[in-house]
Length: 422
Ligand code: CIZ
Image 1 (cartoon, rainbow, N blue to C red):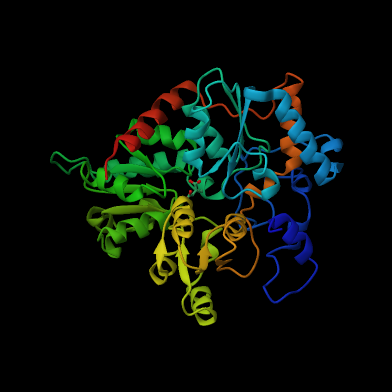
Image 2 (image 1 turned 180 degrees about the vertical axis):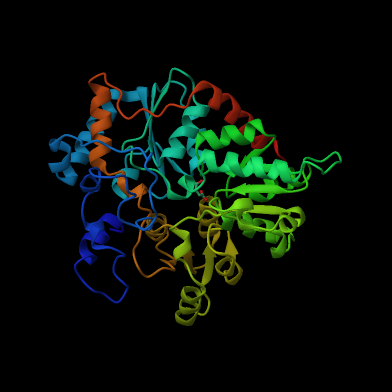
């Protein structure tokens, strides 16, 4: 049984050779963290500061907190069967197995939002992922469909690193700086990663920009370079840097924008010469991977194939055999015809699931310390059982709704992404 939850329960009290877990708090259920000031909770984002506006999850009834795993699984199955075609459950690759087992579709954020579109008969879309994913599903779904996030505290610390006010402020400074430039090209095109709020997707829609995923970032950057002198890329500096570097953009033309400092902490001349301005954001899961871990994996398994996610730091991507989105990683493993050793740099739930699905290969996570995505971890079967049983009772709880204007503008940016050709 590879479930991270089960693995954590067994490792948390033991110091073992694999490195144990990053915090003993992972042994506690997520509802222990639903009370008090907003925080991401145990896991990779635990040291990130959650904004005061971070949605909070109120306490769920004791019957869900106290039920056994088997009872919760049975209640979820029963509620799902009662709801029938009225509900579709989406499970992100990074979710724990105990949640994924109930999903109608498993995939990355954009695949899941699109999968929901194939279920026009479903009145309710239960998104077992994080906040920005539920927002994207709401943007793409019909007005009469409700999108439900089982735990409202399941946000994304990387998405929160680019708040709308700071991005608007950055944009104003850049527009002022580039006001004297002339020519046909726009001075700067904003590009937001899918892992961002609906408000930022709307922002890029309004300002001639586009959304990207980790699968199509190269196509999207080329689209932006065809229209503008430079790109403002947010929130993930690593995806921006790794993608632009692969396209031949020199590192000294990729300044970092620190929203707490004037001109992002840069000289005006640096910003004038810039090709890609990188927002100071990162994923706390992927930031954990290091070149030292890759060296250790290769020492143990000289033929190991090392694949990492492009949200990893540049040195890690450079040292790996390949880098790509969750879907890329999954397909790379599926394509191996001979028994292969895969050392993978992405979230532990997904790596463990691949290891289970492909027992002919040796598959392990580069990071020996178990440290799942804090916010994916907030979705527990207890919350899933609760939202489904509420639906059975005719009540929609934890609905995620994007306002109509943001929906319209964000759709423009998403449409540009879908129309962009490699
Ligand atoms: O878009 C997603 O779901 C994430 C988090 C990354 C990826 O590569 O799929």
